[in-house]
Picture 1: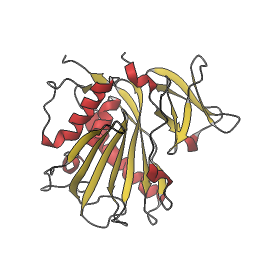
Picture 2: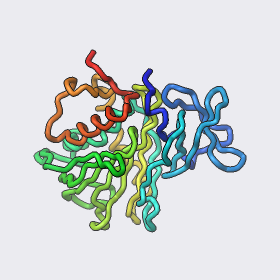
Picture 3: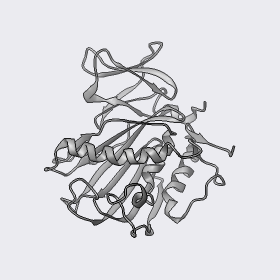
Picture 4: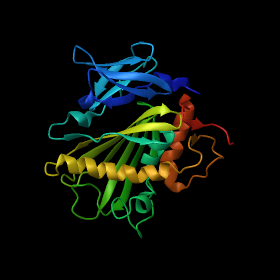
Length: 281
């Protein structure tokens, strides 16, 4: 097992709203941990042998680490904006690398084929040119100027629109998506993917959203996002190899895969390789 630099990162390990005093047992990078609500009302995370782990509570989730994170959890300013609905989507377990789960979230080209008549539809299959960069000031991967025709871009959408996207990768197993907000065209909806690496080829995915949508029932918002990710799960669990290949010769990217290429380069730069396959087998 390769833990490397990823041991010092923050990871989601549960929903704040579902914390119980007796706690819940789970895995983090192969190690058994227990997540519970302490007597002081705050979240506590300990290993199987009782070692307390660092904890932070943000974006509806409890976050922890097996190591010693050098920085606070990344900031999502939109989470503090008045009027947004903050949506805890829940959790989906996926038999794949945590890095595979993030890369799939960054992939635009699969929309018409996996999320047919929702996030994409034929004949609108071409991925237009967009911009990708690794920003030196924040050390994050960003994809901007992404546009795609979507029959139903969000639960709040009433018809097909050309949706603008921005993707941000602030941590190896987390991604933040900014997309056109149908009720407020001048604003961005925020949809995130927080991934808990249970092992190198098994993960819990915790989607979370910060939306401008005053009308859709909360249950419908949750079900819509769960439906989208469950469509992704069937694809993720059938990818070979299950871990994310970082050797450039193992998979051949296309022009539509610029974000994936930048993400893999960024992972290798930082030795973020828990859940990666480094050489062909």
